[in-house]
Length: 123
Image (cartoon, rainbow, N blue to C red; front, side, top):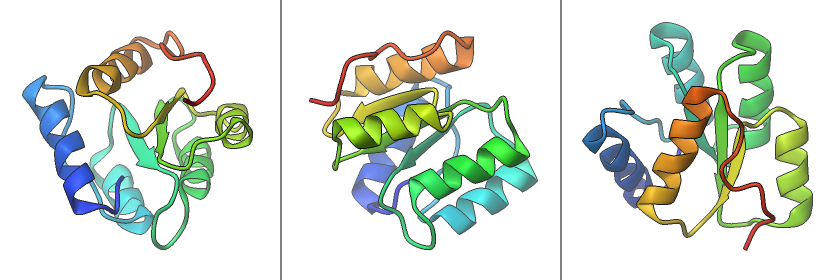
């Protein structure tokens, strides 16, 4: 879930190239509809989103699909947000800007159920 069209396209393209993704959503409401209707193996969500923020989406995913890994991404990374996202159940936290391979690493690890490849603090 990414409200910025360019970033959403980059994420979708990266995941589709590696057969690890599908379509994205521009807001959290559309994302919830997609998740409830089509399901997903992993969710990649931005923090700052229209309708509800990424933390609210994370809470909704935790209620409706507790085992679904959520990768939290943001350009507004700080230690507090990092700790909060992980405490609320995010599989991992990735600060923007990130390299495509970083995103793929986070997705692979989340799908394997092994936690975060980037355990460190935001850059």
